[in-house]
Image (tube, rainbow, N blue to C red; front, side, top):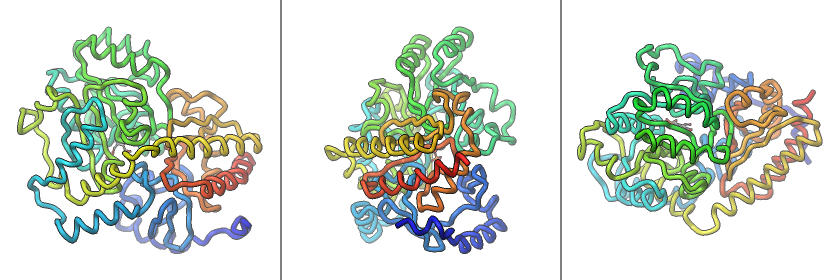
Length: 438
Ligand code: PLP
């Protein structure tokens, strides 16, 4: 019996922690979307996670669809990951700043999994991966300009934080102050899923374009799949003009398929950025690609890039342990099945409540846009009714379902989200869609 519907949750400890945090951490959080601003609430402070569930400081439990924003494809504290980390702490250490065999193992797993990657460099975050990949693209081609798509998010480097998605979009300031105009002059903005527009850009500036960077499936303006032919078009256009194609698979890598979106759609980019899942919940990023290009990275080549904690043994261990599980047969079939069940349950619940939604899903990434339009780019994503999303989010939270605190983010399924969690989520959604429509 869903008795808690009648009893509002107690969030008092979270409120107290948030007030404390506000005094010493800007906005009370260490990354903007965590603050729940776009849904008009205070954030809940998490005390622990277990499988598909997280628990807040007041002891409330939630089914977690954020999964640390993507990394936790095995759910929280998967025994295989925990055991590997414990062994690493006991027998190896925390950091050396010298090469370890562990790095070879993770690099080999990435090279084996991602068909376009011959060589890979490990870094500490997705932001570092995209910054470094673009420096390499510029160093390799000797050109300065890059193309990014409106609403795509590639981390917070100056020249990429222009018309960006994720927290930047959520807060309504997709371009940040503090970025000198000079940083932006070489960034050209295009529309996602619009090949004609991109053709025009290349006709005018193609000879100066070092690279096109794209989320092959977007997650940072909500989930938007590439239109048929879009990624092929990007591949052809960049090849024609001698520009590099960079897939930012920080979110989609090992998520939509073991080999990422490039496996799912059969496209071979020149460079790929990774993060999230390859760190198994610890800070890791990576960029890799064709040998000829990667050999330009220092110290084998002149393009400088470095990191005190890069290839950190604990982070690499969590990544290896995660990949060991998800490379097993049947994993992505299971994720597809459970995600499909969740999506159809949500669509049915929305229909019952008379809510107009567009449910986009690619594998275990899904997004329920509160709009009657087909969401295929930034402009159509922006037709979403964010007030309705906020009401929906709040009602779900009250019923123990933790979604991303913004309309423009993905929900992530994990391998430990089973039928029980799905049923409970759909049941909560029946009520929440009705609340959102009031
Ligand atoms: N690229 C994509 C596609 C992302 O989704 C993100 C983060 O959400 C990043 C880059 C930046 O990664 P990080 O937050 O690890 O710096």
